[in-house]
Length: 170
Image (cartoon, rainbow, N blue to C red):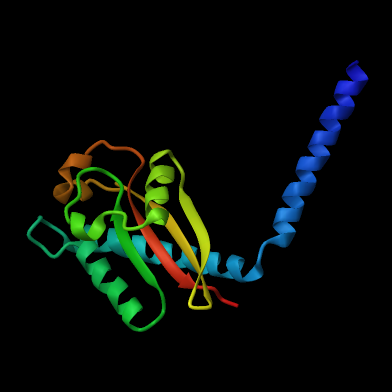
């Protein structure tokens, strides 16, 4: 009986390894390239918001780093590079008409990120062109964040998400 259990466990381990290897090998290189680009953009945008907040946002009446990021997001969209927007994941939003999840993907993002996930993604085809939709968590990272978002003081985990739609790099 012990030998049978050992063989069964070995079979399961080998099967799981093969499945994982198959998934890694089968990964679409265009998705991998685009995901890498989204991670780069995410690092850039989040660090820009932190730096702007740290250096220039001294009170709530000053043009916020989130507003600056929104203007930057619009420039990228207007130039046809990609789309990105900030969505709120909580019930208290500063601009609900703009920051509420707007489709099934964004609702799933809210569910997954509030449950502790760091990212969520899907590949979609729109008018014959493939896109990576990817969302990343936005936590409270510094004390100045709560100057405008006092309701998030002491909150751990995601309070928002950057949601990207980037053409696949074929």
